[in-house]
Structure formats: structure tokens, C-alpha cells
Image (tube, rainbow, N blue to C red; front, side, top):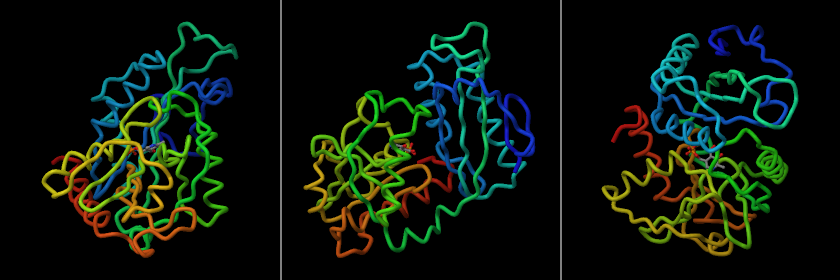
Length: 282
Ligand code: PLP
């Protein structure tokens, strides 16, 4: 695999960053993951807009323009012959002797790499995924896509060890979101997902799903929902750049929609994949 690190395209074995990198030492960095489907970047503009916002919130000045970042994405797709998969981007405040305050005159570190994956024909799209709930242990600024992912790592490991594929994080009985996805439930023709705030990451896939909702004949109710309500829902699903729209068939061992993917989630997935194949344009 050819990866990008600080201006260079290198075989992954040769790509190196400093042991003093603040992303590594403090988790002082931001990341993005965008999908490539049929060789095309999906919603790249929106991911880069969120990157800029996250960096702004932690006062990390990005020396690269959006156009430069898009060009690196494209170059990585080309050099890795990537038809389908993810592109991971991480920017940190750079490398400097370990000290908490921002270092002076230090260039941010930019690392990007591809991961070839089958998103569209993922076997879980046919079976749905199992979800388990676990307390949300994250910090108070979950709207910032920071590289501090210890709580989601523990939540995902818990899910795996419970025979599930995703964890739904809960706070005071309410589902905040998935460990790495937006959580949704369905009642009739209504989709329910919580409002954006500092408590959740504003999902790019969430936004795309909402953009085509009206013409798909569904309505959106933007509100919090409890785990209890989710257990009783007609359908449940998650959205994210890499899971696209993924049906949920059990929550904490309770069967949703008779344990089969629901028609709403499957229809939204189909529409989203059409949208993604066009590069994320309605
Ligand atoms: N929420 C969290 C905590 C995430 O980590 C992610 C994606 O990784 C999402 C939601 C979904 O965001 P997106 O649709 O932009 O991938």
C-alpha cells in the first residue's frame, strides 16, 4: 500500500512519524474517514468541511487547502488502484518536545492511507447487525472528530465480545449514538434520530440520508430516543461513511423486526448507494 505522510507518497513500511508527534502523545489531532465506491470519493467536500470545523474547534490551523486535500485523496485512490474502501486522514498538531501547551513554529502532521473494503456487498447488509448498549464514557465535545478514541475502542471490544458488531452508547437511558455510527429507529414512515449537539458527531451520512428523505416518502423526527423505545421500535439502523446504511436486527439480544433487516433500512441503503456511486451528489 502507498500511504501519504507529510508531503510524500511512500510504501507503508517506509512511512514514519516522530515519537514526539502530539497525535500519538496527547491525542492532539483530528481525523476523517471517507468512502470510495466505484473508484469515486463519496461526499468528500462534506468530510473536509467537518475536518476544517473540527480543526477550528481545537485551534489547529490547517496549512492545506480543501483542493489540495482532495488532490491527495485522488492520488491515493490512483496509486492504490482503489475501487472500494475507506480513506483515513489524520492531522495532528505536529511533533515537539512533550509539553501540554501548543508548541510554537511547528508544522501539523498529515497522514493519509487507504483501506480496501467491500462496503456495498458487505454480508452484514443481508443479515443486519447486532448491537449492544454500553454507557457512553466519552468527553463533552463529541462533535469534534478527535483521535482520542479510547472509549469507542472499549465499547467496540465489548460489542465484539458480546457477539455484536456495534455498540450503542447510552447516557441517562438515552441512546447518544453508535461507537462509530449514527443511531436511528423507525416507526411507520418516520425515522427518528437525535438532534446534533456537542453530544454527538454530526454524521455526514446522516446528512445525506436526510437530504433525500422527503422524495423517498419518509419523514424525519429529530429527537432523542431511549434504549427502551429502541427495543420496541419497528426497525433500527445505523449510518456511517463505511457502513453506509446498515440494518440493526437485535439490540441487547432483543429482536428487532423479527430479526430480519427492515424494508425502510434496506430502501434507504439502496438509495444511499445510488447516491454514493455518483460521488455523493443528489
Ligand atoms: N458518530 C460517531 C461517533 C462516529 O465515529 C461516526 C463515524 O465514524 C459517525 C457518527 C458517523 O459519521 P459519518 O456518517 O460522517 O461517517
